Image (tube, rainbow over all chains, first blue to last red; front, side, top):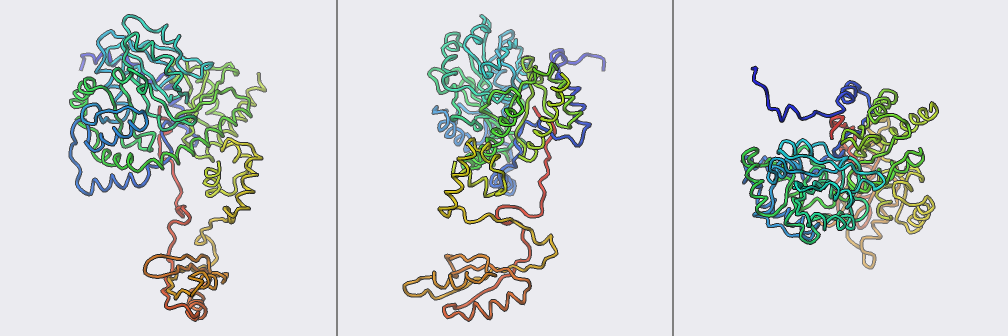
Length: 389
Length: 160
């Protein structure tokens, strides 16, 4: 073939830190701190329900929007956690992970040239999805001094006549930052005044360690303009099941369902049956996993403090985001050297946007033994670096 | 903190106090105080070690014995349970609902010793009506821990 492939796709950048990843993959004995998924197995009762669904021959497509029973359970769960009622029949779409909901949600609301505001550092797929939807991504580089929360002034400065939507990625990957009720109230008026859509990616909503997660949809006049995204991957340790959902006003869900129907048909049937059981009986699993994450989080924050490594205390997801600026190296240089000398793999912060430069993302979805060993090595590594300075 | 402290040490009673304080987000003194209280109140009854004896050279045979008894006036099942649990070879005694009354678990060096315990000591007790002995052939899981299976991390090294 000589005809060129899609310009739009060709112009998408693969990960900016591919070189680093190549080295990691060659190093087989490295302790990894780089995984963005839970270390727990999916709780057995959920897996059992999946097996049971297969045994019963539940192997067909479900309706495009997802199993009715599952949507009803999602509706109840969202009402319980956000105090907002979504109609199971018309305002909920079950998707292939939260990631599909991001893609489909953006495509449903964007016209060519619309601007989408994306706070960074954040999950790697917002910008590519926005570009594929023909939007213009407008990046807000978040600041460590604000604990990587989005402030009203930052938001105001990014808005133009063309701004269509804001992506709100909290609790945040990779920083672990959260937005509390007061933070959301502070940006709500600006959002309403400029009539923006909000794509609120709350995939880590079950994993907060301060107050319970607060969603922007719970504020006045927000439901009508918000696409709320959540799912099963992080809350119930179900990443491989590929199951998420979007809740939004009827008209938006109707358009999203069209795209979903033509591209995907429906989310995996086995996973949907298992997910019903997850919502109905999984609260205690979430609690146990959250406690374990919280213990590890406290351990890491305490270790950094003892090492004198600068890090704000994050209250969400399962990441910490320490600063390595004192060492006068780029994140990638630091991570590469750390990997080569101590065989520990942590992700350079700039993998999540330029404003992540100077930081490392360390995941605590690992056993305490693993984390302890990693902290011993980190301590040794930075002591060596400081001696040389 | 109490419930979380208990659930941590239930799985790992050897965790250092410093570490316990850090992961629970409280001071070391608070942990020491709480542990002392829990011990005094009898909430914490001991700090045992879970051992897979199969992997050692020591020979041990475990049995579960269902025991049907006549409860005694004024004492219910407590008196007969006491007579049974005072034997050091008895590992556990539970009062059970259903087809029988007491479940006794026993650890001995051989089948013979277990059968001797049942015939000589247990069956001869006045209030014991009948017994049914089950030998444990293999332990798959004990105290919430799956025995003999190492957890392997099968995740990709990196995911965003």
